[in-house]
Image 1 (cartoon, rainbow, N blue to C red):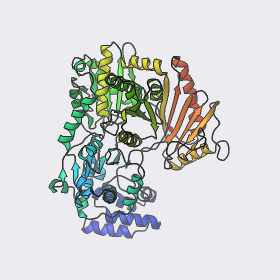
Image 2: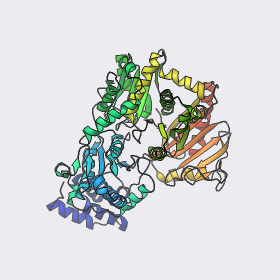
Image 3: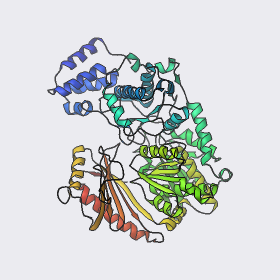
Image 4: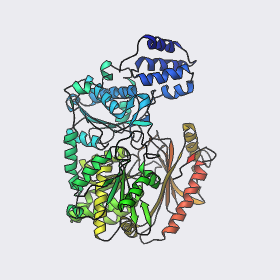
Length: 623
């Protein structure tokens, strides 16, 4: 995609000379028009300059992206704060620079690169093109690149990193974000997403490598001609499916299962891979939702490509299930790292399970089968389950009774993946991990949440329970009866103004005077406060948070006297303030309606008293 000449070249020169009245913005415009070789994104900046849209230009050009809970993620389009050809080239140059300093054998280990099915015509940008440019930058410096030839689920990239012994991996995806977004997700050599200090070092390296090195960095055709490029698709897919059999415990039962399953891939990558996973487990293939099984970057049939939104985005899946008399619906998000599940119960309609409810079921299932194969109680001492701190505490209650270990991490699967790696080095085994936003990992074959393997595991669990005349929902209640009901509520408000978010959390930290957090919520006394943004935890003798300090995000947790735990945090990928509340009851306490009512009151007070949605112009989520 070459530079323009002639009249356009003269126009570019004139635009570079046109002052915006802001020296910083003038410099940013000049840099963009000098460096960008994508005619669509360059034209976007030219148009904004010609129209005098200075505020829009500032938001695009006067800043840079940073690594959140899922790498770099932003809208596609022109600008240093957006995902586009230039920012991906810059990011890859910085990544190369850091990896070449860190790994003495980097030139032999190479990197893995994958992509999902996203694209945006008006910016000439697609996940596939960005992946090829990522590969081109590495190849231009004689680094081997394992570039998948077609779209793959996100977990395939970290799986390939470990399997191939690569130094790192890059996945071009925005997962379940709106169609306008894309992302650049980086994995370390251990197969987990990069975390501190590597993420900060990579960002610093990016800042030092902003100007594209050469024309080769823009040459995506280099991936076709360079001998250092290989396609790992066949090998990795075969290895993944072979290893997936380690999570299959009842193959004979699966092959005779009378249950029907419907699967939606939400216009993303999941269809063929979930079909293969079912075959690996001995099942008949799930029935695909025809309108959603093929890739579509516009996500045409859903208002939001996030299956976590529940019944409102599962409409086509549920209608198909009704027609086909299928009792289970499975939905993977566009990059197939998350899984939503719905079940039809006789006379009760459809139940869409929350992430916390599915985790209770999957945690029980994985431990139940692990115990069948490890009858020695001593073996339990090396078993771990992990969850993010905003997720349900049901596994903690489970661990107290069954004797295995449970640990919490900060939000984001990068923390879980890296903790898994640490535990495995000391001979321990993580058999299940999850985050409440329908991200699950069964076993430890991947260091990332995995919707493909989770879909097959849920299907086998449903088949096993059906053979025992139990539904998923009935077994969920059995679990709660044994380990205590855990009633939770997770949702969010949208805030498109970052200063307002800062003001909200600043007010909470000075609620009852300077440096004084709220003392009550809805009239219930707050017993403890943990603020991982500042590192404060009133429950600790030294008042320091056990969880790592996360100064680049906002997260405050309140423990109430009535047993409710409530957390407010900003999203790492979207303009949202998320809230999480949970009531943890003791085993045998089964007055669910009273627990739910108590939780509802606290949740409403949390929003009204601390977030003040109306005063702060926050958009509430209505499903």
